[in-house]
Each structure stands twice: as structure tokens, then as C-alpha cells.
Image 1 (tube, rainbow, N blue to C red):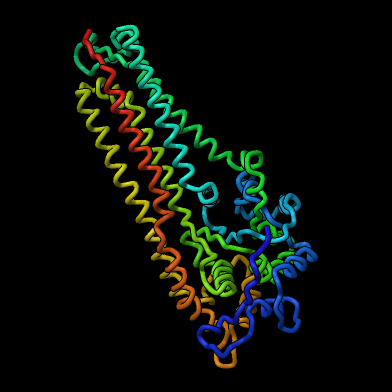
Image 2: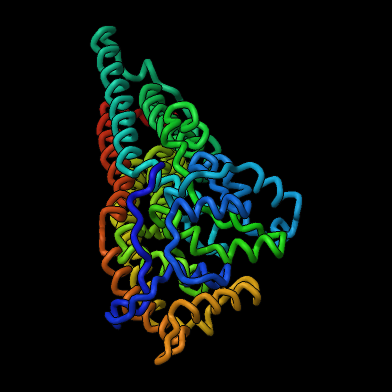
Length: 451
């Protein structure tokens, strides 16, 4: 994919001191190669990375298919040289990166993978397919049941499944006979299968993408585990030294945010350097990885509560409670879930935004964590060379930039509610569909006759 016209990397002090004219990208190059300061184009950066054997990217389909290996953060796995070598050899050298994936390896690997799936598939596409399939199957089942009743002029009890339940009581023969319509059970089963099949398609999207959308599969991602070799000290140091070239060779940045992200020095440095190179945060997208799993988990819970009404009704009969009372209780529980779940998702999103802002405001380079002491020293060297001046040392200037300029830009970018609305959407789809399902099931009389 061709890059847009290159943008000159300005000095990190350019906005605070307009007189400064030193370029930021060449500074990273000077630290890496000890050469004179000069602008490095994206094409030249890619060729240099390729010459060094570091230009390796991963497609989204590979991220989806190989998430067990790509997102695994076990220290034992990273120490296994054979696993790291095989992983590095499995990917190709792109001309440029469409996305620079910035994330913390201390976060949940499955949550990051699921967030990336939701982000790339598009929440609205998933909602449209989910809504269409559920309503189509529900309407078809209800129409079929109504046609059979009119065609054969029969009572719904002839199409019922009888379940014998014992009541708690002093009499041994105290039992009831429940009659469930076969069509209501098939209706619920069909809805469950549709939802399960869509989840299966979501989980296997990486494999489906290879066959149905090969052009989208060609988009390349920068993932540090692929391009920065973790088990070779010299190659790892070389990859970190070329971090500026990796950033310049990327069109956009996707931040998979969690609470550990602002505590990692490398993560904050990547975000700060990219924002300075692009002159803003328009090319940066931030995804809260905790909100997506919570949204889909609540949708599944709500679906299960509505579908398995046989279980609470059987428990009610067994305990001697009134069947309609339990129906009311289950409906109220589902309604409460439908109200609380979106609210909790919104709270997670806005709380993460506030936490991110506060963490950037209080960020201190000296206290930030790093996986290795040598990596931390190398990044400190980057910061000192790029942000330092005769009036102020680079570490202090970098902290001030993160607390002021970067925090303001990130706050503006995270105010968008579009992504949170796409997360609340699955709950609304399930709620509307289940209300329609319950209305159709009421067409089926349920007989409860004592023996």
C-alpha cells in the first residue's frame, strides 16, 4: 500500500519554541547510526530496515489466525529461541506498514486479539448481520407455526413436548406435567444457533478473510514481536535503534489501551514520537481493550438468560412457585441486564479515558517501566538526543511534552463516542430480538396439568 506524501519530522520543541528547526526523525537516525542530521524518507527507511533484515510485517489475517503465538507474552516462550526464529521467518517484508500496533505485553492477549477483531471487521457490519439473521429466522419460524395451525386446524398441544417434574412436598406423587411447544423450542434453538454461528465466524474471520477479501488481507501491520527479535541481543538492540524508521514507515497507529499502557516507557515513547512526526493525533486510533470483551460477554449472558427459560420454569415447578411469577422475574432480570450492561460499558470507556489522561499528566520518564535495563537506557538516549537543548535536558522536556501537548491531543481523540456506541449496539440488538421472540412464544399456550 502506497504511503501518503511524507511529512517532515519536526523537533519536539517546535510548538513550544517556534525558533527551533531541528528535525525529530533524523535525530533518531543520528543516535542509531551516528551520522549527520538529515531527513529520512519512508521509502529510504523501509530500504534500510530491509537491508538490516528487520523489515518484517504481519497481515491482519495472520494476527487473527495466529493469535495464540502472536499475542503470547510468556517469558518462557520469549526465551525459546526456536519459537522466536520460526515466528520471525513466517512473515514477509512489506513496502510499508498500514498500521503500527502499539500495546503493552502485560495486557491480556485474548482481549487485545478480540479488540483487534472487532476493530477491523467493523462493529456495524457485525450488528447488521446479527440483526438480519435473527429477525429472519424468528419471523420464518413464527410464520411456519401460524401456517401449520391454520392448515391443519389443530391445537398446539399436539405439537408439544411433555416434561414431568416433581414438586417438593409430603406426597410422593405430587408432580406436574409441563407441555412445551416444539416450535417454541425450535425457535429458541434456531436463534441460539444463529448467534453461535456468527460468533464462530467472528473467531475464524482471519481464515475467511484469506478467501473472501484478499486485498484487505494485504494490509501490513508492525508488531514489535515480529520485527524486533526478542531472543537475539544484537538484533533486539538494532530493532530498538531503528524504532524511528519503523514509525516513519507506518501510515497510522493503533493503540490497544489498558491500565498498564501509560506505565510502559516504550509505549509512551512510541505514541509521543508518532504524534510529533504527524503533527497531531488524527492518524492515531485508541481502542480500550477491556470494553469489547465486556460488551460481547454481556450480550451472550443476555441471550442465554432469554433463551433457556426452560431451566427457571422447571426450577419454579420443582420448588412449587408460580410459573408466571418466574417468567416475570426472568424478564425483569433480563431488562435490568439490558440497562446496566451498556451503562457499565460506557463507564469503562470514559473511566479509561480519564485514567489515560491522568497518567499522561503525571508521567515521569525516570519512573516508567521497561522490560530490560539496556532497552530503557537506549530509549533514554533517544529522548535526550531528540528533546534536549542547551536550556533544558531532554528527559524534562519530554515529560513536559507528554503532560501538556500529548495529553491534550489524546483527550481530543478519545472524546469520540462512535466506538462506544458500536459496543453498546450488540446489547440493543439482542434486547429487541428477544422481545420479539418472547412475543412470538406467547402464541404457543403452555399447559400445566396436575396428575
